[in-house]
Length: 254
Image (cartoon, rainbow, N blue to C red; front, top):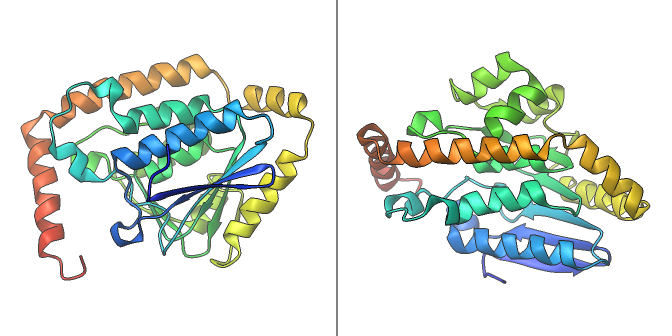
């Protein structure tokens, strides 16, 4: 399933997925999620696709979920594309490498914990502002973030919603390396080509072991999703979301 704001193309043994909505800071909406879910399924189905590179156009990686989607009633949370996207990413069998430039917000950060390798530009910044909006972090981030970076920093980033820099991300092990904005995508592509050249069975088995307990990750995603849905129905959350939209409307920069 192609979509105008998600570019999917082949590059030899690689699938290149580009988030292409720069006018909205690459915020992800339902059709964009659906397009990436379909691309993941295609990559897993085609044996000659050996790795995926996920990148973006414009100055930011992604501003996260397009919050406009949360203004409409959510009839069935478990069919909601944002949840289906993180499920598909966690279950992806094809190695995936991310190239992050500019701002990565919300799911733009939590998705990175499901990528095999992540490269960031020097000016990249990361923020998970879920609690500030009155909602619950997703993508099993309440499990994976403290596992990766430790409870103290996870608390700082998930409860205080503090942002962190590319150098912080490198020091904490969120990203593998930091490069110039013009170099970061090619750094990711080079790493993906190296993965694509590895023996398939050995790579797949090692990758599966490295990624940990798939059942625990899936269970945490479902627990977060139920709490997320409950939070969206709360008066305080609705007020915070409406305040966000009022601020965007009034901002001369938007």
